[in-house]
Amino acid sequence: MPETTKSTLAGGPDKAEVTVDVVEAQRPLRNLRSLRAPNLGRLEVSPGHALDASDDADDFKLPNRTYLAVILVCNLLLQISFFIVVSSSNEYAHALGGDSTFSGIVIGIPAVFSIIAILPLMRYDHGTYKLPLHVCCSAQILGHLLYALAYRAQFLYLILIGRMVQGVGFTMLMYCKRYCSDPRFVGIRRRTTLAGAIVITQGLGMTLGPLFGGLLFKIGFPNQVFNGLSSPGWIMAVVWLAFWGVANAVYHDPPAAPPLQPPAPVEEFELAPIPTQSFTNETGLHHRSREHPAPTVTASARADVAHITRANWMVAVLMCWCALAAFFVLGAWESNIPVFTSSDLSSTSLHFSPTGAGNFIALGGLIAAPLLLLNALFARRLQDRHILVFGCGVGTAGIVVFMSLIGSGVRVGYGPLLICWAAVALGFNVATTVTLSLMSKVLPPAWNGRSSLAVQYSINCGRVAGAIWGGSGVAVGMLHYLALEVGMVGIVAAMTVVLWRDMKAKTG
Image 1 (cartoon, rainbow, N blue to C red):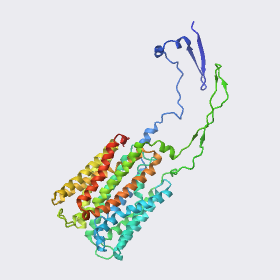
Image 2 (cartoon, rainbow, N blue to C red):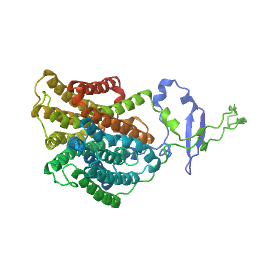
Image 3 (cartoon, one colour):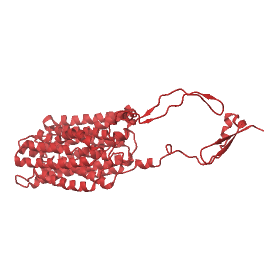
Image 4 (cartoon, helix red, strand yellow):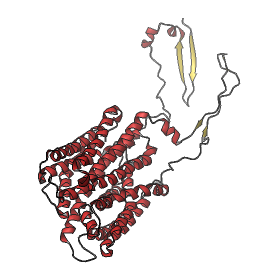
């Protein structure tokens, strides 16, 4: 009769006896497949190792709809405020003694002061959004009032000062993007979708702003206080005041996030060292352990950095450059169209008024708007890298076609210019969908604030440089103006080819 050994497993109120046949254990390894383990009952998994079914649900979570609506409307109003002066700023600057380059500075200067104001504001926001919302609304109201009063005061630099004050309010653009990628209430598979919603409001603002500005200029309102040049400031000040009251009533902040910078490293959890004395087990075997220092577990930014690979850093850099290049091109075209279409160059026969230029910019945005909506609907099914390639490809095609028309010496008509502008507006707005969403997917969730800051800095730099470059496009030569844009997008294309595999991330 074969020798057997009995052993008791103690793990709860019920104990199971397991009989192990020593002879069976001595059979060749190939026969182990025929062994069947005894029934030990249900296997209990400790909570620390249990599969959490909520992980998948967290990937698809969305914020409160009312709060999200406040953020999206705020982003829309910010875009309108930024672009409403585009169609008439050239005339406003000339009426007060300025020139087209000064007009470009007026369009782009808010982004500079937004860059300056972001860091101080981030020191006091504590991961919330209501303080930046208050700063945004108050700065927009004051800035629009100063912009409107410049005509009555006949002071050229007051329109510049007004736009500088507005720049402090434009810090909220970063918070709108950060809200749509905040891991506290936006799942990783919904960040590109919400970024698509941000791009829709961005496209609508880019369309409605110049349209309203051109319409108000055409109506005129001939008096020293409320006229075609100052009326955008008066009206937007009232709109912002109404929005401020509604937002303050219905929006409530999420719980404050922990500070980005952790305190000095301290031992938060200490694991007891394994005893060094020898002991004897039931079999009589002696074991002696080597003494180890007690490890420490700390939650710090250094631990997050250690998990970021070089490829992740390169993708983050690419997203920042893509944001800069896209908004450089968009800002350049928006400030160049009123200047180019009203110039006496032989390459154009349009001779638009500010109203015509504003309507033209708005029409290009209206053509692109339905496609931006489709982009938001299909973003959850497409990879971010594919969206980026499509957007940059369409936008670059518009630049190249316009460049070939200018280079051939033909007079650019309404239709060809509209097609090129619609392609640029569509393509680079689509490309900006993935800048922050993809960066938030390749970097740790704790870096969402840093990612938003980096992308917004890139956007602001692109807007400032693009607005100034577009206002100077006729002076430097249209071919040189367009060649720089192609070169900047070419860098995006080259880096995308190199980092293509590393840009793969979860869809949605």
